[in-house]
Amino acid sequence: MPIDVLTTPWALLVMSLLVLGDAFLVVIPGEVAVTALGAIAVTAGSPPLWAVILCAALAAAAGDAACYLIGRTVGTERWRWMRGPRVSGALAWARRRLDQGTATVLFTARFVPFARLAINLVAGASRIHPPRYLALVTLAACGWAVYQASVGAIVATIVPGGPVVAVLVSIGVAVSLGVLIDVVTSRIRR
Image (cartoon, rainbow, N blue to C red; front, side):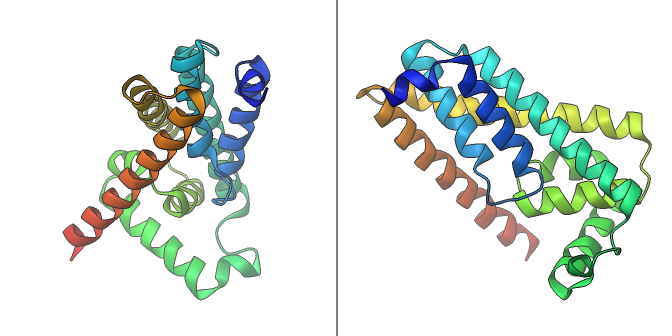
């Protein structure tokens, strides 16, 4: 029965809401939802994989754009939580990165949860030209959506055992890839 629910259009809506919410609260499992629906799309045939990718990309771009608007209208120092040492350090890091290369940072940050929030807030506060920002964020969101859904779809194609096994294994693979990327990038920075 639970898999039946995941093959309805409601699953796309729920996934989109999780991805949108993930832009603000990094504990929301947006990536997991996209990976899981990518696996379901291949094993159950519904929702279509293209719809998973499209909805995920639109929700990711909308979430990033909303953070940009918050940064543009509110700034990065209005609320006390923004002035704390950890958050202000992340925002300072984001400013330095945006100064070095906006496109590279927006693409890279799409894959790093807290960095994504900081980068988008700072991009808005820095008043990066909106059409340029939206174009870059949309491209980054599309690449991210293709990646996340493809991990689920590829694992579901390779691993036997039906949709539940495919979802569990694909989530494990996605998390492992994320950890590997974090380890490699931290070693490169050193």
